[in-house]
Length: 177
Image (cartoon, rainbow, N blue to C red):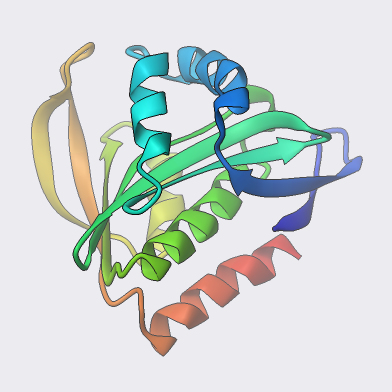
């Protein structure tokens, strides 16, 4: 999976999504430490990527450099986006959109019919992106982010396995062209 994006200096570059492997974890952990106050550990990532049947973890690469990653778990017909992050110099370049498309498609392949996630109440750019994917708020988790005490908004997308939702994914792909 690849698509062309633009650097902030307007130079075009190719973005490739691929399954997360152990060899990517040094870069993933670097990004994790930059964007999250309480980063996941190497052990946790290793446990997650080992569960290929019910987990999907992807990396986004530019010129073989990992610039973003995301993960999803699927249990029965419910999928959950467990993590998604983009290296700060690449934020705002639609890397998150590419990862969301890949994660949702992988969730559908594993039997997902609904997808949920949590997002910081203060992270309005992410909330706007998720809304473009048909996610809507369904609740609040008070003090969910322990390091700051910030609330999480629980967002949900229904019927992701339908033709109607396929149109939403196609519209997001069209934004990348």
